[in-house]
Image (cartoon, rainbow, N blue to C red; front, top):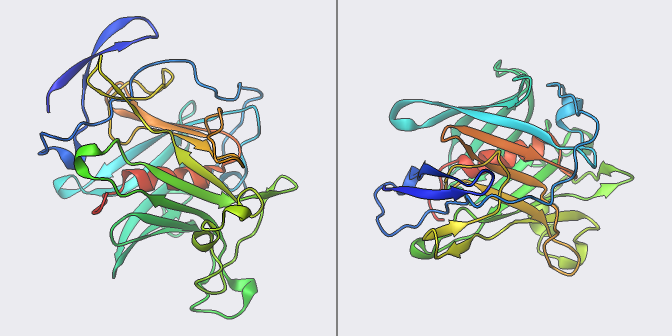
Length: 300
């Protein structure tokens, strides 16, 4: 695909940005969202340093209000560019926080989430349908299909749903994310005991929003006639065009998006994939959303 000349408002220098074609390399009609217009974000101000570790407690701890956890992800690729593994690091220290390997299952996909590159050190699983439009994050434990003892059942930590879009009107991988609401500052426990008790079902009831679950939505890119591309406001940690770049905001009770950014994800300097995570997400929830964004999809 052709290069674009895009203005960077941080220093008013003109940059040559190469579009990330990914699965649309052969589509001449597809306009990828450049998402490059730089502007200050409504992100929480940095407070005390949030020191990362790769323990269960850290990965499942909510990012404190007033701080941002800055991370990046490196993709390990195999034959024909197939994604084999995702490694998540703390940007400042380059400490490994999570290593994720994808495994194929009949009619679905499963991602094994480990605290190290040793696959036996699991902290949970991310499961998707075959088309890659729905993802559910689970803690360690058993499915209700395999156990009747509630004490042994796994918890649902997040549900991610991607919107179907016509190819020629697509503005990136738009999606909604749902996580358990907070009770006294801690995530409520959602433990499915059948197919009608998980986040996927709860998300259909708007009256349960903010009571039983929090709902988030990607900010929709806006078409720029100046740049002839879809754009979004990012800070300097995202400065390269990619269909995977996104800003995630919480939906308020009135159905409008909050001003604050909960997660920012995007490409920097043409090769780095940076992640900024804020309240009320845990690192494990945020990393799972990034995996869902990078995974190949059949129907969107």
